[in-house]
Image 1 (cartoon, rainbow, N blue to C red):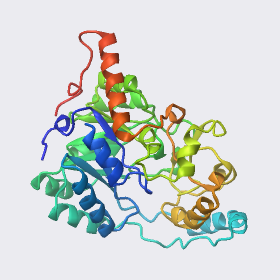
Image 2: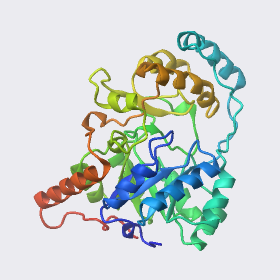
Image 3: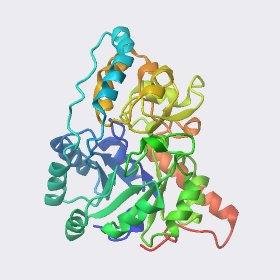
Length: 366
């Protein structure tokens, strides 16, 4: 397996692991075969479901790939606040003719079982979201040759990941679509100033840790990839850009909404899951976002039947339409072609800058 971050793929382009169906074997394989680094999202899947997708991906590509895990979450939810939110959602159950979900689902996302599979049958890379694994976990992966990455949203989180033995960090700016990968969900930090933009955060992390950095958050063009490489990243991770590709497993309503002028902007919200996540502003987000408690994954389980019913009804106004701030720049291209276009744009930007610009692999120790 590769031992340096820049050995994983030809281009410094990582396809983000998008839980909920977006990042499956077909998308990851297409990205890997085109010269990028494809990722499977194990979040919300059983351990066996994850393993089956790994087998499918290995049947489609021999190139290195990654698997992303959700860290277990502490039970911090206020039961009374969740019940109040259940009452707030009563109108949704009537509209979509469905019941709300049971909030008492598992909070560990099958973490230990997934770790066991990945240790017994190692994959090239494993990344972690919503926290940092223990040194023992990261050391165990190092022993089997798996490269480890921890998603971070602050310099302090990056430092904790380095201390724990991670090989690299994925720096997630506030522009990123989907869930913010904060290690500690602090409801008091909610608001417009709750997160740092990618370039500012990237600079802070680069001055704090010595391990390589993957940059994520609102990246949609090769010129933006060039910018984060010049700012010290070793690779760039893109999610929304790949969400619209035909290989993505995202709901067609979700894909259409990314470029639909009806959806003009994104916001961070707890409305769908109880954890801050960036999505297109639709009716559900507007009506329920202000009242949603900090209660992940309880709220995720609570709203799940409503989201499924909205999808079945073809109503994008009831879906969690995760999207980064650059969603209007999404291009409906096959994933492999998108990788090629991004690489060409990156090369063109470097050529325009002339000698001395930051190139792939120069963004930190590898």
